[in-house]
Length: 610
Ligand SMILES: Nc1ncnc2c1ncn2[C@@H]1O[C@H](COP(=O)(O)OP(=O)(O)OP(=O)(O)O)[C@@H](O)[C@H]1O
Image 1 (cartoon, rainbow, N blue to C red):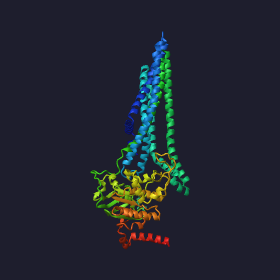
Image 2 (cartoon, rainbow, N blue to C red):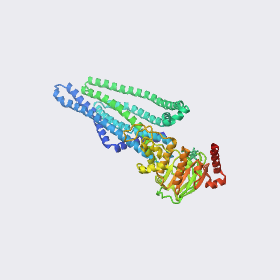
Image 3 (cartoon, protein in one colour):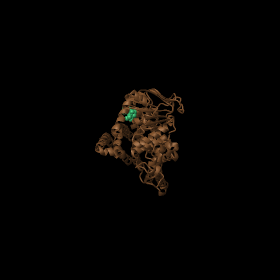
């Protein structure tokens, strides 16, 4: 991050105005109430000190009558009541602002992240850091509002006391203002350093959260214990924390020197002013009331100045941090939107890849190097190849989670970049190689495949049947309503017993059922749907999928060559290119890479059986 572009005054002002606008949108009523309390709390101390001066001068005057002071005493009492009420109202309004602003900021942030159509931004570590800082600043947005309001209150108090002091002694007022200038700049510099430090250490902070997650995650616990990795990861977390703490410590140490010097300067100025005031009163240049006003102004101005400097520093720092939030909510989509978007039509001719080249980053290796192939409508294509050949990458390109750098993918002859990505995905059903395991009920885990049918028990059950998981789900304690989580309880139930966990193969079948909620879509893509299934389940699921895919356009990625031989066409991907293509029989006759893979697998089975 360049320091100048994101930590200059322009960035601070951008952050400030964005947070105030956000608060205005989130809770205008509470903000208005809080502004009213600022006016009361900012001006009441000044008004009280003038009333006090009047009382003291009256007491010292000849022929003073106690009844003359009744209104002044009542005024001081009223101000005290007003201040107390303002304090209570401001606590309440602050609570509302905190809840509304933080909720709105976080929801706008997540909406922005979710607007990214592709995966590439989310896979960049720097963007990750920004999102993490943005989440922190979204949660702390209300602190910035609080600091700005507190600052405004201090400005009002300062202005009031400054005017009062100007009436007593313009020189003294000028000395007090000049004494505050170094404090202001020191705090501003400090907050800029702090914001830079946050950014510099965000990678370390993210990593130590990762280690902490590993050490407390039940999924990771097996390997961590088996390989004895606990101490190792704890040590790495410690090293990262030490590094962050070391950098913070150095900054804090610099601050001690600053703050001591500033406190001594402030105390010196106040003491000098007081001594001067007493001498002036002794010489009858100032009245006793003037001295009481001077004492109140000195105390009030010191407090307001410290408050103002603190608020500026805090809002400066928080506003700079807020630039990360603004960066994320304003981030452009990682997939270019089509200039003239077309709604994807039902697939009728087929899907075609024309000389597709792809790599994950500009300086990374090419993963796909000129892939060309055609999947006619209503046929099945199987994709096979060694680990890392680029099969899953191809699947992700077909879903437009990335765009190829060269070449194009066509849906009935139309470049898929001309479709809005979400509309293309509406026409596709996919089981990814690493499907999600949602901490939700079994029924929801399936229904999520088609949100519109989330509560359609008939369809959910049919999909579970097709994925051969229905019977297992009915045996769960609450059937389809069983929570598949050890962390959360189901909503809207009295039941607070923890949910259950499924086996790896059962989760895999659940993911398959989720995809089958969309089985009527134009294109079905299955990336290793058999991983984790036992032999009986695999046979069963495979037969079911074969019949479901019949007449539909489908792409199946699999290492189990027994399951791909029925496909209408098979391609072998190697080194990012199509090494071979044809039917099972053609490829076996060609005696090339496919035949070698197939024979090796078949021999493995035969040897096992023997
Ligand atoms: N998000 C990513 N960022 C960078 N490189 C990636 C990413 N995903 C995959 N790769 C790289 O792309 C190459 C192809 O990966 P891909 O997952 O497409 O292979 P695959 O053929 O599906 O392998 P497997 O049979 O093991 O599932 C690998 O070298 C992998 O390291």
